[in-house]
Image 1: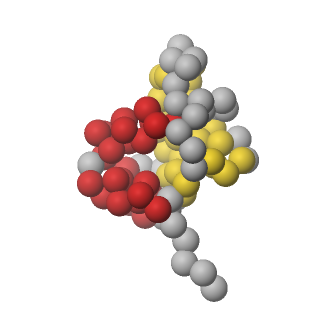
Image 2: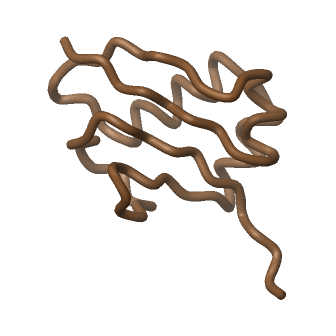
Length: 82
């Protein structure tokens, strides 16, 4: 098991009701698993955020379902251009 810090921004923060959370995860945890857990924990509002959003893991943008491989996971909603 390891600890990751999940930080939420904009609509993701609103959906989570928090700025960040500490999660205990197995060493083989994947982004697909995290997506499902975020939806289970935070409901349909988080599901909408994740549908078009992305993850930033230790500074690298990720949209795949693979291994987390980092200790800081930022949940980023879709951003408007401008």
